Amino acid sequence: MSSTSLPISTPEQNKMLILRWFEEVWNQGRRDTILELFPNDAILHDGVNHFHGPKEFFPFYDSLRSQFSDFRITPVVCVAEGNHVCLHWSASFRHTESSKPLQISGTSICRVEKGRFAEAWQNWDAAGLQSQFTAQ
Image 1 (cartoon, rainbow, N blue to C red):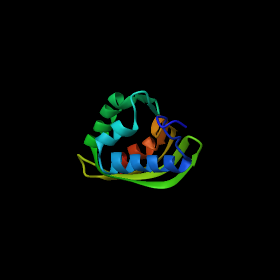
Image 2 (spheres, helix red, strand yellow):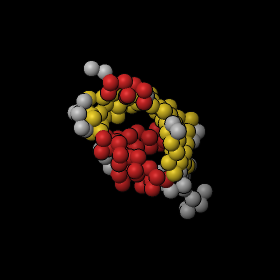
Image 3 (cartoon, rainbow, N blue to C red):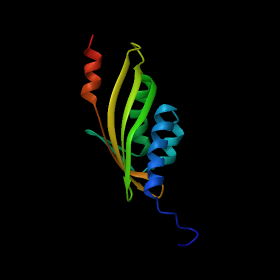
Image 4 (cartoon, one colour):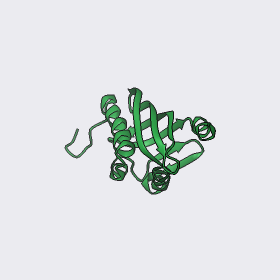
């Protein structure tokens, strides 16, 4: 390996990467981490939405952070193999306008290249979130 080539990500490094993403981006609200870990040529598949790089992800992120506060994403199960890592997580947060506490769970699968996300697939309980708004 030449001194200019980047090291290959290991499964353990990939686990640390996804845990860092949720801790810094969501729990701490650090937008700069998005730029560091989600390059321009990366894509996030979130249900019917597809976000290419930070430029498309920022409006989605900013919208969620304006509607909800007090994010606490908690890792439940994290597994990695090769250049893929999967995190099943639970999230608690508060609807900003009503102060209503909310909880959901979800799963994120990421393909990592050179220590950054290349592609990600995310599925979370949107129906459960909606039902919490209509529950008395």
